[in-house]
Length: 506
Image (cartoon, rainbow, N blue to C red):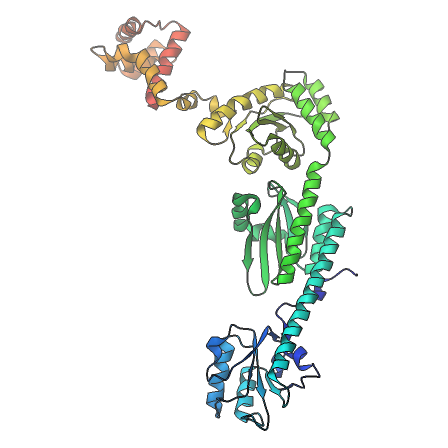
């Protein structure tokens, strides 16, 4: 079979009035509403009610012998307006010597012409059942042509999938078949391939739908449908999301079938892409294992990085908690961060990327609901340092329920906040308790805080308190005596400062 084009896509919705009238066995004749003979008829119905509209579902050819048909123009107008409002596509009036009408009433012709509703004559002796069978046969033929078109389009998609064109080739075949636009995005929202007019605008146009589908995972889709167009978002991937397909096509059941086929073919292509270069991923994992152990010279590290095809320069590390799917997460990392070193170890995935990479943003998509620790950028020979920081930060991430950078855990207040309240309060009360119990505890605590904040400078601390330097010395001598900690000892001063900070945090 030849490749199908969008012009060959069958129109859904049954047989047209013109196609039905063209059947020589029925001998139907259009006497009014000839400008609307392209209307599609989905079903034929027979009714002799005065007002049959409420009994219609839309898409009908209404057949009647006009038993209760109005005999004046206003009545015929009202009769046809009601049918039109309920979606009736055309009227067939049966004529015959033994029927109520041998000729079409002029009032009915005038009303049908005014409203643009096709009015057909069903001549004697053509039975209504013959017209009904013709409508259903025409609809069946239309559906058969649609299925054939969809199968041909599916074949073209499959052919594109096994050809060298990859994702762009598949989307080009989809565009040729449907005339629609399509985009494939990776997990980070970057365009992997697109085809068709307006494709570049789809990520912006479907931003809200894409966010909803991302949140729903592998089984969630979204569609924005109007009378003429369908805009859809589909996840791509077998066991987990590898990317997303965004499409805009004409609203038709046949086009939807082709879109479903495209999802399957694109999923296979993405999974194939994920499976490629296993040897390359292995070499990068081994290199990370080596460079992550110890600090080496920048020249040696850069040489090793170049050998596995990644650029030199400063590096930044992260650790992702992946207790149940580390191997799958590792593949996701390699696919979405092409310059990464990565390896799976102990239910985690270690990642090292060039320092200019938006690592935090990338992991926000790849591992939004996981514990993640991120190290600080380091020179290439010292990436082991950034990796150690990331391992420390991932523990803090579990406690805080969000991704944590190493700079955050370097803040002592954040370290104290991470402790259980009872541990923090217990430490502060143990160290500062003797001062709390003193007769004049407030001046002692205030004086200790001013002294420590002033980095041990007596004059500046006394000035901040508004007291004489000797008064401050007397108070701090009392602090040392009560707490058992010497203020000329760096360790003792640090313990007192930690206690004060823990109490401030609460």
